[in-house]
Structures are given as structure tokens and as C-alpha cells.
Length: 309
Image (cartoon, rainbow, N blue to C red; front, side, top):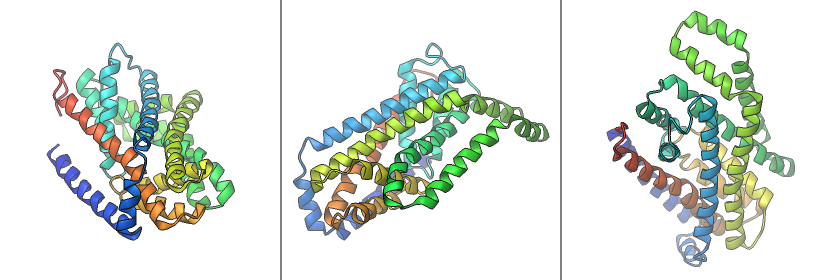
């Protein structure tokens, strides 16, 4: 946690530098005036969409917990929600690898072996990716942009699923390695990646990220007075995909640059409104989530449960 606290400070400093650089690109004075002229109600409206995103992802989290045998009786919903929300703070770790904290917190709370819940974190990221690819598909047909990286990501996801489902091949490797923890990890991975579970989790993922895509479309409508829902879904998903693929903490720089560039290139916005839209979106999605995650982590660390962070 000491290292994480240092990372928080560093990431916030980097975020400030990125935001300042972006605002300078869009003309500091114009960006500042545009932000001051944004209707007050827009921010709460965006936060509603973001909250719906978290709610749908939490439903997916609860469903996945049930698939590996962790019931709400064993892990109460309130505690499960705090653990889930704590993972939002780990968005600022490279490639979101810090979200493995959720497995650690579950282990501390109910004593499950780490290998039992670690697959859940991987499946969350996998289904997030598939959900975003679905959202990008309409834009791909319309704009013919980013086809190769998106198809590559889809191929990687499908190959991973096919590999996990090939139990004969995987068991061969597991017998060679001979580690019990890996066998438990693989057993739960197979459960979570069944066809039925994939349909449910990918559907929830798609709906959840559709909420944030809707938020971007609303911001575009208010700031630029243009309505581009399909474009908003594509731009949000593609920029998020690039940010995650960069493995940088929170995709800093890459996600913001991609959002601004795509808003200019695909829907013809000037640089000032493109920057304003990017800053509002990142504040009401990424940084709102980090704030919620840090508060949840603080609540867990101060609770009377067995969890010590």
C-alpha cells in the first residue's frame, strides 16, 4: 500500500500534465471558457451513466462469483460491492493488473485460495474487451478505421477462449507442470468460459460500456451541438482499447490523445470542443471511478472484518 500511495501521487501528477498539455493544444483560454459554459446538469447526468456502468459490471461480478461457488451468504453483497468498487482504484496501475487486489481481499475475507478467484479478474477483462469490440463493430463498418488492431484483439480473445476450452491440451501441460494452484486456476477458468457464461457476461459488458458511450454522445451533443451515437460508441471503445493496450497507468496520454484525435478526424470537430469533450469524459468516467475506488478501499481497510489492507 505504501508503494500504491506513491503511485497515486505520481499518476495524479501525470494526469495533471496530460490535462494541461491537452488544454494547451486546444487553446487554454478557449478551453477554460468552454468548460465554464458547460451546463451544470451535464456532469451529474454523465455520472449517472457511469454509475449504471458500475452497476452492470457489479451484476457481472456477482454472477461470476456464483459460478465459482461463492454465494452471497458466504460473501455478503455489501462486502462484495466494496471489494468490487475497490478494484476501480486499481485502474491507475499498468494494464489494470492491480485489480488482482480483489482476489486478495476475497481471500482475506472468506479464506478462499487465491487461485480460485484470480480467473475471475482475467475473465472480467476478457469480456470487457469483447463488449467493446461489439460496440466498435458498427463504427468499423461505417468508418473503416482501426480494422486491423480490432480484428487482432478479437482473434487473441477467441484463441484464448479456445485454448482454455481445449481441456485435453491444457491438462497435458498441467500434468507436466504439476502445480496444484494452477489446476485450481484452470478448473475455474473453464467454468467461467462456458458458452452460457460467455453469453451472459459479454452481454452485461456490452451494456455496461454502452452506458459510457452514451455519456460521450451526450457530451458531444451539449458541447458541439451534434448527435453521433454510433460514432460516440466507436470513439469511446476504440480510445479505451488503445489506452488499455498501451499498458500505461489508466492509459494516460494515449486514451486522451486518441479521444481528441478521433473526435476531430471522424466527426469533424475543432480542436477546442474536442479537448473539452475529452476532459469532461475522463473526469466523469476514469477519475470518478478512481475516487469511488479509493473511498471503497478506505472503508474496507477501516472495517472490523478480517481484511487488512
